[in-house]
Length: 96
Ligand SMILES: O=C(O)C[C@H]1C=CC(=O)O1
Image (cartoon, rainbow, N blue to C red; front, side):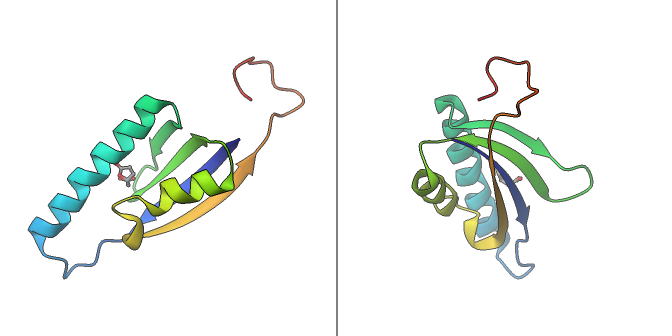
């Protein structure tokens, strides 16, 4: 199942710098591992915002929830999920 996910990040200003750096390093490693696995298909920065648009390809809602709630930055994110399905006019074969 494909999901569009918007992640808006708000790290509190009073979070110690070293703690923020450690969380960001773990976030990057977690994200890149999921990208290598094929579950996190796309990640795009939204210009001018500390936010991304991502596409996930997972088994079901439960797997998506487990992945998102495991993000090291999850406590500092607002996450918006939109389930996707193939558009009847789509011509790319790998878009499902
Ligand atoms: O920077 C972000 O958009 C938040 C988060 C998502 C993946 C990652 O490495 O950081």
